[in-house]
Length: 278
Image (cartoon, rainbow, N blue to C red; front, side, top):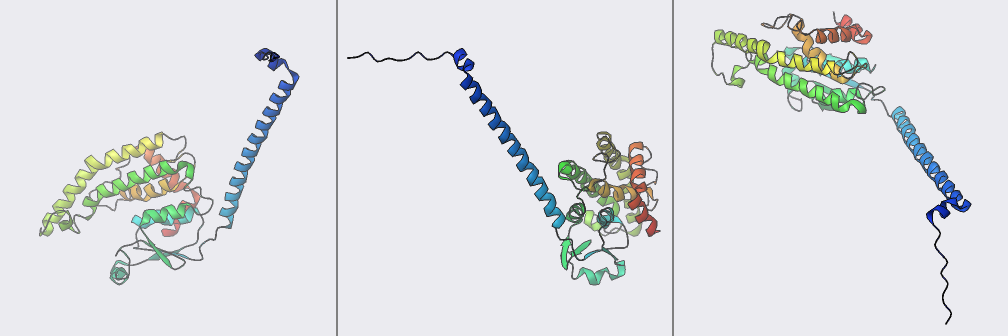
């Protein structure tokens, strides 16, 4: 029988020297380039689509924010609406009228945010919602983790301030039942003294460290976010001299924080807001 003929396999060098192989490689490279260009085009299209969706998103017809005639838990939400140029009805309910409103409040508490007739509760949810209005720069996705970290620290501070804040009004809530008025006063002095000397300094240093870690004057750099709007009224109240047994110069030992606060209060929209409250 005839002996089968097997042509020798070309060497690697021969394959790469073959003009047809070079053409195939060029075609493959061209294909990769096309695919890369297509992927970039798809990514760009997705970005454009999202921007179009945002631009077409229906703005609420009406927004009403109800709270007491003080800053406290509602102020960060008010500031977020101010910073995003969002019109809202700022309803300040006198303390004497709260009983009637409380009877219809879902959790028996304020603030209450009403959007197109639907009531929303919990101020953190409110400020996160407000931060996404406008161009969304108050709560950008790229900085969401850092923003939430700062807000979480603010929540911790609020929790640790609670005993000193309310021990005089509701001492039973903190385990002091049936104490006299004089004992209430002594308890407030004790609780707030401990807060000022032991608890608050830790938070002021932590906030300072967070600001030092950024390249700008604010918690996330050069742009104000809801992180700044949450912390501002929380610390600002301590500097007003209206909280008994908390010296109004309590922030002076933390120049990074006082510089940040000055920058916040000098922001045109925030300045105009507080000027209008005078």
